[in-house]
Amino acid sequence: MHLIDDGGVLQDWKDNQMSPCNWGYVICQDNKVIKITLSSTGLAGVLSPSIAELTTLQQLLLDGNMIGGGIPEALGNVSSLTTLNLGRNIFNGSIPDSLGRLQKLQTLDLSENLLTGEIPISLSNLSSLNEINLSGNYLKGEIPEQLLQVVQYNKNNVVLLFGYTGNHLNCSRNSTPPCEKGTTKAGKWSVMDRSEVNTHRGEEIVWDIEGNNPEFTFYEFSQVLEATNNFSVENKLGQGGFGPVYKGQFPDGLDIAVKRLASHSGQGLTEFKNEVQLIAKLQHRNLVRLLGCCSQGQEKMLIYEYLLNKSLDFFIFGMTVLMIRQSILYPTKVCGYMAPEYASEGLFSTKSDAFSFGVLILEIITGKRNSGFHKHGSFLNLLGHAWHLWEERRWSALVDSSLAASGCTLEMMRCINIALLCVQEKATDRPTMSDVVAMLSSKSVALPEPKHPGYFHVRVAKEEAFTTAESYGTNDATISTPYGR
Image (cartoon, rainbow, N blue to C red; front, side, top):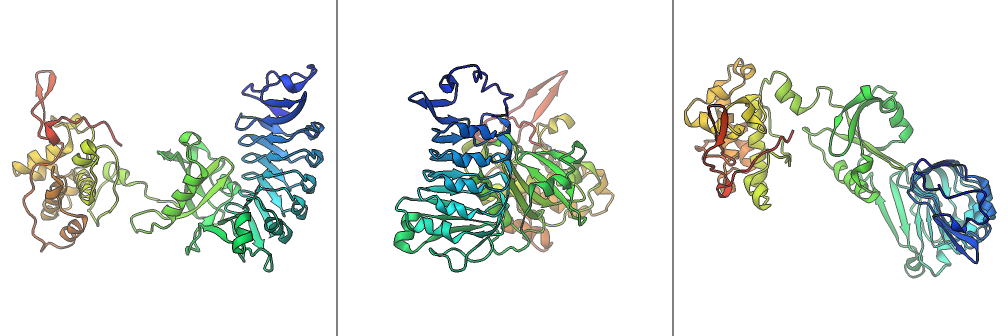
């Protein structure tokens, strides 16, 4: 089949054998090949037209590989085919008209490839069709009305998937059963059930990822590839849980940051769709804006506006901090920021966010990370160090030298007070985030005296060895905090 087999899955496919029925991934009946299953086996290369010589082939499953080139016209001659799944590859060119000759075809999946052009009207001849998936390509034009009519006159259930990424397809205005009018514009995917069409006049389930946000864009993979210079190492900004992040620039000069989903993340299309749908709704001045996404084959990416001045971590630990502006209402869920009740018992509340924010304030003021703070002194973490200095009324020793030069002494003391209120061990003793905003916004709001924080562990140096003194943390249990940043 002219396929590249780096994984050796076809090592027993020998041309000199009398029958291919002894090959792996091949199923025969009466010594004739009826099924080939090579899904997600790492194959590449092109699909040879000679595949059509298997005239008794009923199921061809090649999905989830890196097979490219055009889809052979000769496949239309395999009249026995009931299932043709070429999805999640890199096939290009147009959909062959010859596929319309496959009268026994029940499932056709050409999704998530690089196919272009229009949907052939000949596919309307597939009277046995139960499922067709053409989504995730670069198709254009109108969805043939005849293809929709195939749905109406078949008693079996059928799923039609046309849009959601790359495709620019229009529904016919006078189609029967009714089809959503207007352009799917790469943002919609339609699911139609044949049984429902017969009883409910073509009810349609539509997911519109664009919603009411006209600024959200669905980018083609080629656009992102060009913008990031083929994901060059020089453009790599870092690595996160989602995957690597790259800087890029579109031809109009717009700088972007591209989060590229790691292949080992296990996130499927449904999870990716849900994530995009959620993030697209988030609008906050302290959050970078999601400009759009890209989903093509195995590639799934989020495209954000590029934050020119680096990250918050850089501002806290890499340059002069001039002031604390307003609150960032964002739970970090990073070890070292988690509230004691969440870390030990899994209990989460609005007061858990306050704890995280308190840690963040202390990090900004001191210029030091909470996790691994023992490297800078005799205390296991920043919270214990801050509490010790506060009790001794030596809070000014906490302030980073770059901030001390600003002369905002009273403001610094107030921020430390607020931070210690946020990190108190018992959630009931902490303020809510709305209270914190009020405390930061107005000096007239009185501040109570804080109690000792959670994770209050003291490490005492004796000669050349370190020993841990009595713990005052949750349930008197020592909690070791690994580096979370």
